[in-house]
Length: 211
Image (cartoon, rainbow, N blue to C red; front, side):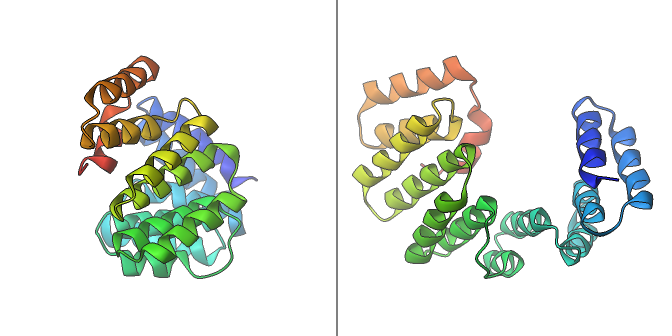
């Protein structure tokens, strides 16, 4: 049995407000699945927990070679501003998973290790699908902004939007950049474009609010 089927079904139940059923389908799947499929289910089940219980479930999933669980564990540590533990969770291998490289880059950026951060984002671009590239370009733009290169930041934000014109983070980051630079009319137009698209204000503001 493919554990990802249980995981996706569980996610759909959760999105429609059927939380108990969502959790139950994962527990049913755990009784039937082994190996990597079990790893997918453990990762999904971890979303119902916090603290040590969450970490233990993710570590068990990692022991079953579930790469996405490494990413989830890293994000858990990052939410606690524990970037060293996050990097340990991500490991040091040459991954073909762009999410791993993106998380590494964000950890290094938060630790102000900008050379390592840029290298990680660029490695992510080499293995990323088209959807993921916009996130990596936007993160590279934030990095360039933090080292005082506003023009470089804008170039990367524009690359993110050229790659995916509906990339909410790119529109908002570009808007903040222009607002920061005093180009108010251009900033307004940038924000207005995002409002007309899908208006993911809260999510993006949480990431780039310090701008």
